[in-house]
Length: 351
Image (cartoon, rainbow, N blue to C red):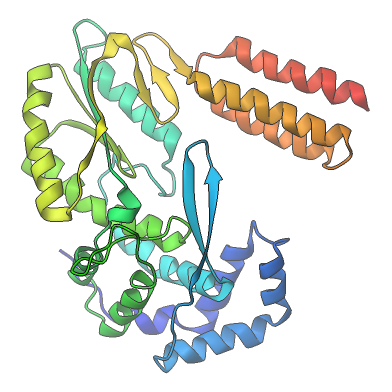
């Protein structure tokens, strides 16, 4: 295991903080709190640098709100200066950890993502079924209240096993301990906020312990994970059944987590596998019905706003292209044409 030292001083340099600012503001240029921060940018960045250098930095509180994507999620938003620091931390830590993650970990990694995860599952299914000449089975699970259940002590222990830089570890403690979920107890502080960029890295670092257990201890051949949603493929249903107690035991004892009791299934490939928004069958792939309904609803909502003069045509077109991109990875020609027709007859002909 490679050990990392002397990282803190690189992280807190004004150059790295300004770089983090540019990364942070890329898709938030018109947000009110971002504009306010930008008005005093140099003062804010150098103030943050001084606090970090003098070890007086303290993470601020969070603003909570809910989103539906489509699942309802409770997001916690930190202040801009803290989010800039999160980007600075990512710029230092992500390259170090990225090279240690298994190939089939697909969440929040450059060059990965949902489409690569679906492609990997399809490839594993074809290999296990010998190109659909025999049965293949899929064990699919996800972890109950994953982000809320990440144990602070365990997370910091995993981080400190590689990071031998006390100043950086003290800063990571400050960031991790800035938030606790309602699953925390007097003895176990738990939870990382979904709204933090660092939470994406922390989640992968935390679950990499599980990935390594699956691949090296259990020696599972066909495995993939996206955040807390993981799949194992085998030609033997009995093999998957026998794995479950070992998986449950490891998650509980090592990571203090448990599989969601209503979200564990073992399914035959021929019946269709619902994974990361797509449903995979032996000879074709579909998009979930609820995804199609949401796409049609969102397009019609944007069309209505456009006709009222509240948004531009470009906004409607961007929404259309986003959904067409999702649909392009499945066999959904007819539905894609339906979305295009909605756009053409209600937007192009409206001009």
